[in-house]
Image: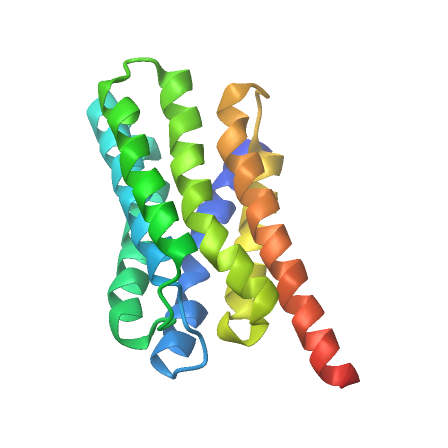
Length: 193
């Protein structure tokens, strides 16, 4: 029998994967324009996390990290054709910082340091999409981001021991929340005009 927290964690995993469905669909339809830098960095982070889980032998917990690799990988591939066409200096800088951040991740044997580096790499990848969501909210899918926000909220509720390991779910909660707020702001602004 699953505990409430385990059930919430499973629901969070399912919802986080489900969020990619509308995102991918609206990307193919041309309604969403994923930022290439963000999604390639998130694919990299997802791959690193999945390989970490695999290396540690935690195969029961590997499904969410695999999802966080597969979903962004599909979006990254789609971004080549359907993505946001502007490749800014910010995008380039974020990719460089993310790639440099891999080096300490690869050489570190400290799980806490590795977690902090993963959040750093992931948040570096988030910057272009946060900026784009603020400046051009019509280029993102609010339904997908709302699903990600709900999933990340459930993940927070699933945490049984609050410590440094809660850093990544907390970061994801605020990331999705900020993007949802920017997208809602854009929709409200559009209705007023």
